[in-house]
Length: 412
Image (cartoon, rainbow, N blue to C red; front, side):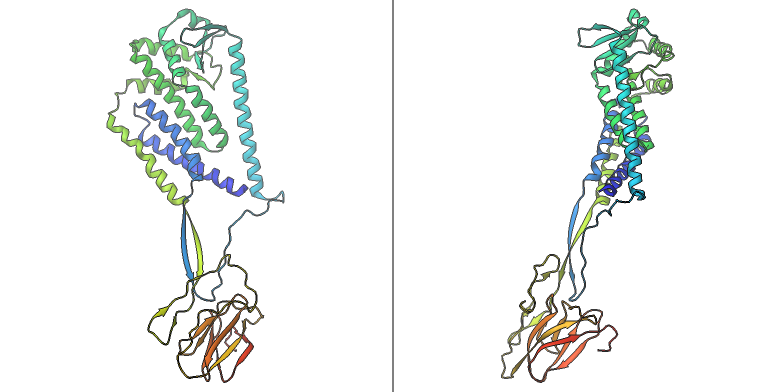
């Protein structure tokens, strides 16, 4: 179970890296901010779900008579010893997850504590402006906009539109979702890069809302540069940061992408298809083939239905019905031969072919190596199985309870 879980986490990590690589190559420079945001979130969601989707293909293989067919399902080896590397790897992974979740919980606690210590000014649109005495960079968290007293007294509409764009687009929900994904993939650089890219897209989307509202671009740029030097109180929330200003200025100066370039987002489809194909598994059902018997009175071929090897019901020794046999329409007297076929160690050889030499009569031994066959007097009977030498016996009288030993070295 632990091995399977770690394998799943590894598949998720590979998918996240592939999705991020394609995003950087195809979508990063496009101005479809809302679409790019959806692509990033969908990539994370698909990466965690896709490894759980296994396509099972069923295949039937007809094994030759006497072939030894082994079946089973691989399972995890016991992890009872503390020196097992898989167990230690799992413990290290869990420790990283716990530490990251603890860090996120502390950040949320500090953020809520800061907001609770601020002056609360409810707004008509359902949001709340929290005024902080410290000189901090403006940021938003769910329905709350946090301003310094200077920004609140300035009442600049550009700052309000920017932070309300974050709130109306539910960017705080995205950030919490990414925190959970990062906790589960803390060792994977791709998930950290995706989280950073998602924050940048949030800012691009908020900037586009401000500029589309008729705010002067030069005034807005100067406002961002001035506020970026303020103290960043909480990195969890959407806040103006000096680290992202250059990319934001370049994005605001870029011409709008053509709608046809949205088709580049279809890169998700081949990645999903290839992953499903690689994750597919084939379940092989083995069947034991029986001999084709020809009735002497007609030229019709009778092929008994294949017998399932796996999970077949137990047969009481010497009670199993022999494979379909033919009764000759002649006056030749038939003799009965029966017994068991074993290997050199005395183990029964199931599926051994007991055949009339050059004739049409035959049977196959059951799970206990037992056989029974009616054969004309004077006929030679061949005992054949895979991996052992063939034994031939001439039948002159009834032969019952015979033990036939088939040896690998051919010295029968």
